[in-house]
Amino acid sequence: MKLTLETLQDTARLAEIVAAHSRPRDMILLAGEMGAGKTTFTQSFGRALGVTEPITSPTFNLLHNYGTGRMALHHADLYRLERTGELTDLGLDELQDSGGVVIVEWGDIVGDDLGDALIIKISHSEDVDKVESRTVEIDLRGAQWANRWQKLTDELVAKLNSSVRGLTQ
Ligand SMILES: Nc1ncnc2c1ncn2[C@@H]1O[C@H](COP(=O)(O)OP(=O)(O)OP(=O)(O)O)[C@@H](O)[C@H]1O
Ligand SMILES: [Mg+2]
Image (cartoon, rainbow, N blue to C red; front, side, top):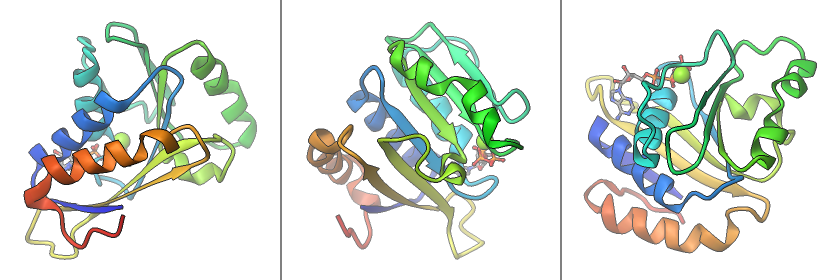
């Protein structure tokens, strides 16, 4: 499905809704160019889970872990991944198995390696004057999110209604 978010507040709302539908062992991949809003999305997602620590970009460390929410949040950023072996070293599979939710910025650059996931691609508006406007495409891969997809997209339509444009669910 495709949404248009007009403001930063809409991105926060999107993150809150996705967080409300998230369960232990979920994988969420965030795609989109630099400055699109992947870290910003994760900050709102984490706050919605109840994470109390500040959530900062894991661009340099590749992975940050937060344990204060209703489930663990593991936040990775693959932008600086130099060898595919490094992906294995990060141990995202094990973290996922241990019962947290894993959010991966630039998760699209490793192809299908991360398995079943909700995939959220955030893009800047074509209109450069609309600094807070973003286009968001949400897709799923595999069975993990399949049985929640209808409820999730229904809620996004209902609660981000004023911002939904050209819905192609
Ligand atoms: N609707 C919006 N959604 C998300 N971020 C927005 C929005 N409007 C403005 N912004 C701003 O855009 C910037 C997004 O930066 P952010 O670090 O989240 O991007 P990123 O996708 O994580 O980039 P990188 O690939 O460098 O990690 C922030 O300064 C944020 O305040
Ligand atoms: Mg980022």
